[in-house]
Length: 129
Image (cartoon, rainbow, N blue to C red; front, side, top):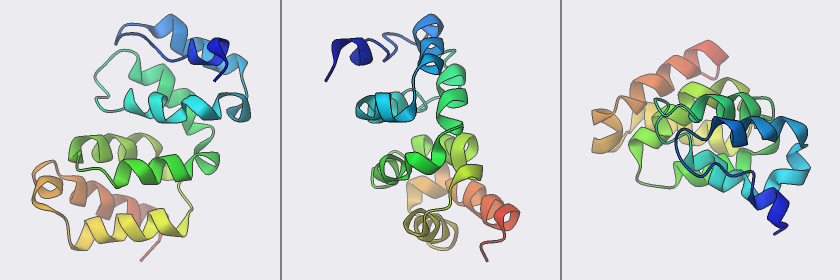
């Protein structure tokens, strides 16, 4: 991985300056760091989550494989934030199927973190019924 691109991954939750540099690059140029960037959405209360979200939200259609990997984890809170922050741009059938699964058959942790509720709201809003 190009060290210049690797340097675009924020180093800490207040590293907004680094996150804002993402806007100088295309999604193709930073594809290798998308999984690391998605990790910064594990808690939307982190200051750096906002600029990362702004960048990734413009490119949701191009990062749906990486988003699917988030949904394969057991981190319900991370799923919640990804649904909230990036869900409106999702159009991949595999992701839609997973969101529907969360809405109707959530795990205990998905229920506890209200991911199922977020999934139902998104399904209704997008008309995926």
